[in-house]
Length: 272
Ligand SMILES: C[S@@+](CC[C@H](N)C(=O)[O-])C[C@H]1O[C@@H](n2cnc3c(N)ncnc32)[C@H](O)[C@@H]1O
Image (cartoon, rainbow, N blue to C red; front, side, top):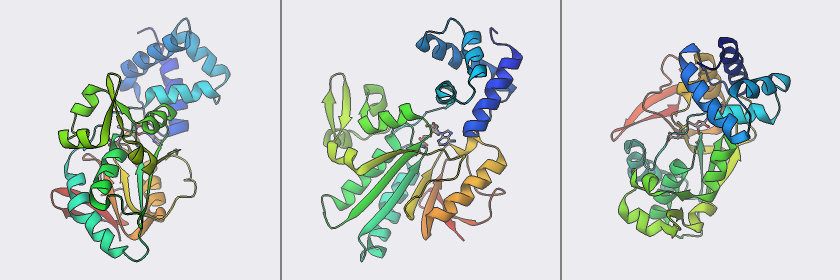
């Protein structure tokens, strides 16, 4: 190890204070390897130098770079398949009837990473509603990581990323070649509104949501943070809305204000 124990503790503390991400001593290797990459990108001579700079300015822009370096951005199109099948076969058709009068839908994809999740939802909406101008669909994609938000906005994916989970017919229908990569259609990019939102803080004003995707992010937090986030989500979700969590996440024993339902082969949570 070229990083000292006290530097590991300091980094964990800074990252947790800003993002609520828990990095304990078992994550020493991850912390070090990500800081090595960041120090190299920034031109710092070593991780020790980078940490020393952070100690001098623990809440400046370097803090945000360190937090971004510590986030795990693993994602893919149609990740876990079942939630998206339930969304397109059950929830969206029902919501289109239930919201038929106001013709408006608000969907929030919290912790959107590089955008495959919001664009999966955008493709499903496009398949169902098509170009019907009478519907106003607001699809908000948020994350703490500004690099990921920039990637989401750009909507450019490499061959490996489009090979993971994206059906060939949707690749053909909604993407165009962009050099060696693929860029998602401008219509779908225009549907997705990207925004910085730190789940560990008070949420900024959000539209009342019909569906919230909060997947594969609660796992990084302690139980009190999970409870606080679920409490805030409860305030922005409509009383008949749907909340999707990741496969390893649940509201059980965290916040009993949610009722677990099975829709098809997906698990979804509804406000009680
Ligand atoms: C593993 S990805 C999940 C992506 C997507 N939801 C999925 O399930 O495929 C976790 C994301 O959570 C974001 N994240 C971590 N801490 C956060 C926080 N405090 N507020 C908002 N986003 C956060 C990370 O930047 C990362 O993009």
